[in-house]
Structures are given as C-alpha cells and as structure tokens.
Image 1 (cartoon, rainbow, N blue to C red):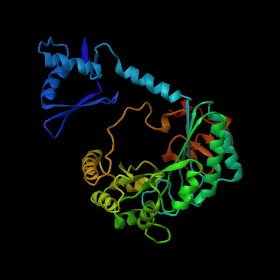
Image 2 (cartoon, one colour; image 1 turned 180 degrees about the vertical axis):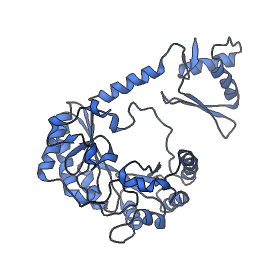
Image 3 (cartoon, helix red, strand yellow; image 1 turned 90 degrees about the vertical axis):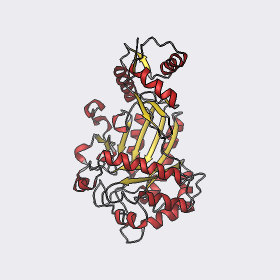
Image 4 (cartoon, rainbow, N blue to C red; image 1 turned 30 degrees about the vertical axis):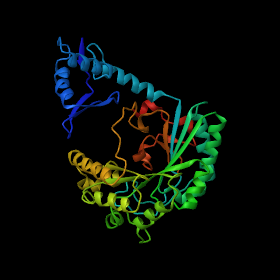
Length: 376
C-alpha cells in the first residue's frame, strides 16, 4: 500500500504546468499540464487500480522519486534519527570566530549593541587554537567563519590565526575551509589577496538598499558613505578568486527599495559576478527588540521574496536555488559547531555573541564547558 509522502508538495506554475517537490529528499520535478491533472488524482488516491498506461507510469515515477511512499513508513521517525546522527557527527568541526567587538559602523538594527571594543590577546589566540585541537578529529573537516564586530579591524589576528588553524587541519589530515562575514568597508584588493593566501576567499557582505537607504540603515561612524566604500571595494576585487555573497536584511524601512539595489548592482556589471540573497530582519536579541515594529510579517516576506527573485532573474543574477533538505538547521543544533567571541566565551548561536547569560563556557576552561545536551 502507498501513501502520499507527508513532505510532498504540489504547486501550480505560471506556464500551464506544475511543480512537485519533496522537502525531505529535495527531489523536484516539473509536470506538464496533463501530468499535473493526472498527478493530483494519483496523490489523492495512490492505491486506486488505475488501468490506463499514463496513470500507471506516473504513479511508478512518483514512487521512484519518493513522492509516494510505503503506507507503513514512519517518515518523521526517519528524519528525527537523521537529525540526531547529524547532530552528533564528529566528521566536521565548525568554528565561528569573533576576534574583536570593534566595529566601524552603527547599523540601526545591530543585535550586539554598542560597547567598548575588545580584541583577543595572545593568550586568547593560544586558547582558541587549543580548543580547536581538542574538538577536531583526525581526518575530519575544519571550517572557520570570521565574524565580529568587524573582523577586518583585527586583520593581523585573522591572518595569523587562519594560518595556525590551517596548520592544525593539515596536522590532523583534515580539510580546511574559511570564509568571512564582513561589512565590506575594509575589503580592499590588497586585503583580499592577503586573506586568499591563508585560504579565505568567500565573503558575506550586507547592503540594505541603494545608496540613500543603505547609508541611513548602515551608517559609518566617520560620516562617510558606506555604500560607496563597499561597492567601490567589490568592483575592484578580482571576482574570479573572491566569492562575494551580498545579503539584504529586509525590514519595512527598505522593502520598497530592494529592487532598486539589484538594478544598481546590475548597472555596475555585477550580474553573474556576485550572489544576492534576501533575509528577513528578526527582533531576536535584546538590542533588536526596540525595532520589532519594523519587522515584516512572514506573509509579507513571502510576497516580497517572490518579487525579489523575479527582479534577480530579470537583471541577470542567479536566483536562489530551491530549498534543499538539511539534517541540521544551523550550527546551534550541531554538537561540533561553536561560536567564540572576543573574550574567548563560547556560544551555540551567532545571535547570542557577547551575551554572558547565554555563554556555554570559555576556551580558557574547556573542561567546564556545558555539555551539548544542556543546550538542547
């Protein structure tokens, strides 16, 4: 006996066809108008004794691709088991490192708040390397994401520590990958070249609209245009070796201007050269809660996101791919993923950086780190 998978979704399309997608497996197919008509009936009554060849063949394809599954299959139990296996997996160690609290911007929605700058000491650096050595298994994968504050305000530390951590990976026969979340104001070609030498060539940079909008939401502390500096740096980089992903934080303040930003970037010749993604701003941490009235609803985000994808395609940028299944949503639910801040405090989630109430412990006392089970 068969049943429709709990994760099979059927969407009408705009060209007299449809899309069928399984969110658990990631399988996706485009159905012709005829297949759409037949498929709706098959998903509704998968065990009917169909006689015509088209229906029989389509049902077989639905079974093969996992859109229909055995009626006794417990898909939720399988997903839970997959989640637990991935959570406990030691074949990868992911470190998000914030070596400094300093920042040269004053973004209106910054969830870290404004504080005095703090930066790793030599003792902190040694403790971070020792912590990584403790957590990295032989033959595993070590991935590092540089974070902040603004990590490029601590460039000497980033370069030195990237070298040390890459050497650790080599000594453990582990793979090495490195990327950075940066505001982009300091990412000059010379800086990108220095980072490439230690294996860091992927960057996430935020622009929240065209110049006027971005500079209002992400102002610099010295009064200069952050948009001009960021875009100027991006256009001077060798985009064959530096991979740039531009993130737009969506809120009510910039909802009407995101299309203008895409068109501006296209006019600069960046279509096909950089990626662009849209993310909703969420009032999750204490400093952000005062901005809760500027957050768009999930329904509004869905509509705006759809319009955004159409503008991306029209301007020659690669639209975001379809959702793919993941065993873990983010590093916060993975036992071998850690966020380490400028004091050496360890956290599970990026949003908790600097919040002492959320710390799991310190790299200076790794044995006292709260067990992953305590954080679930």
